[in-house]
Image 1: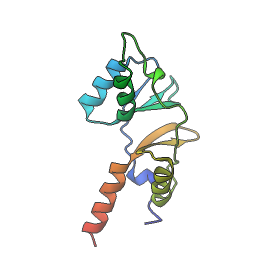
Image 2: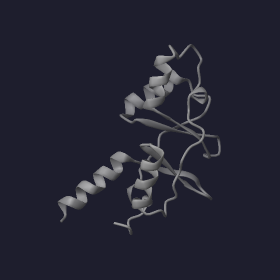
Image 3: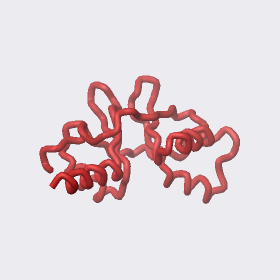
Length: 132
């Protein structure tokens, strides 16, 4: 399993938003696409943050969003990332150590190229078991 890299498991058909996207619009995008996170990028596709369903718990608990609230207010900016060349065992350890379920995959030259989630890892393990 050490020779399987992030690039093989990550989702590269990312749905991203800008920091000035309204929270209401971000939530609607997540619902419509059946996803639990949005990667927040600047105009050049560079990582600015991540907004997850967990962030929406904070929004609701604080009785927000108010009109015109942007995702920038709630997104995590100290984002833990991985590279496409990292082995998935390292990725699993990074997730456990940081208590996260979504890791943006960042290439130094291209910026954000994908995302790997606990669902991706579980799916991989399931297919590995089925093939044994």
